[in-house]
Length: 213
Image 1 (cartoon, helix red, strand yellow):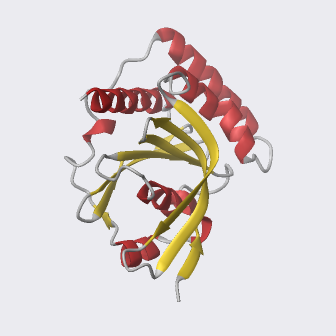
Image 2: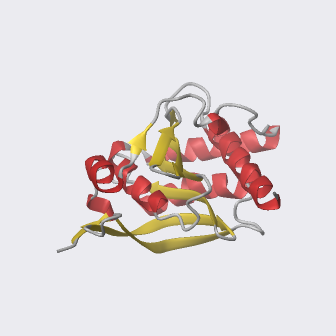
């Protein structure tokens, strides 16, 4: 009998045992978040400083929900990175369905925000309530990324609770392998949104180059 798991309830252990997912710490696997990053302008920095200020104001109040996260921080990031303009487009609450190779386990769920270029998934964003750790959504985002309809191409993800951000890369060839960036956090000195935007721009350009080739 097939075992069905909701994406929000999936664990890393489930993905490792049922889908052969592997984690790598090889620094050469995920250079896209570290090297050849896109520059951001003074005007963009000012805009991101305002977004950070809005976030700091919101966390003064209890129970900051996902919609507030998206409105305050994710919307500026997606706009400034031009991921909302052609040839990209965004969908929300997209259903996914994946099954293990032996079809013994299936995972079903809905993606918060998905930015696409043709059939290439550029970004999966799972936002969580501000008080929740990123660890809560890590397995869920990876489950979504495993559902990439073009597994021969790298899939990138971004997990955020509004204040913290982590990028992921998944390559699904013989077995699915993923790597992670460091955590960027808005409570750090300066403004880590600068780095987040640079990485988003970098991933966008890589996707466009991949399609052209």
